[in-house]
Amino acid sequence: MSGLQCEMPECNPPSEEIKAILERYNTVAIVGLSPKPQRDSHKVAKYLKENHYRIVPVNPGQKEILGEKCYPDLKTIPFPIDVVDIFRKPEAIPPVVDNAIEIGAQAVWMQMGLAHNQAADKARKAGLQVIMNKCIKIEHMNMLK
Image (cartoon, rainbow, N blue to C red; front, side):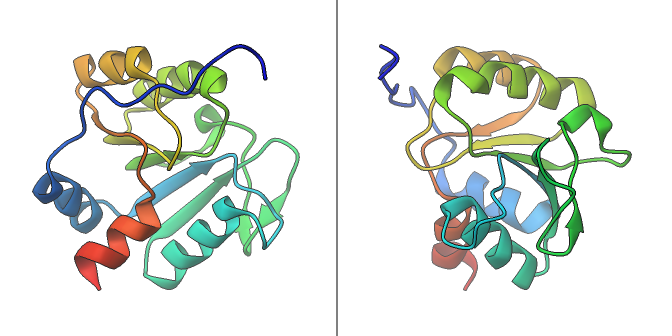
């Protein structure tokens, strides 16, 4: 272990706000999306795609995942992104959040087991909604199915 401990989220939006994010936004960039079907990121992306979200894979080592063009980073995506869903180690979160702010994303979603309070504060101050330590697939299944 690199000495970094996983943070606990200082705060998350109420359930109604999370539900509104899931209903309002459609284009989800998935940072750290794996091409391997057994990985959580792949399962989540497949679920979102099957539930009428536009998924945008972000993985510099891949050309295509789940039939979608893969981008090396958020800044190379040539169209607006609503939600940036992060599947990266905690130490990789701050630059992803910086890029999410830079591209004008509406929300940053840190998957189950991920939280970075300093990056979350920065995103909120920039006007983004932030969800930490929650799975977008599980939240969707619980709120909209």
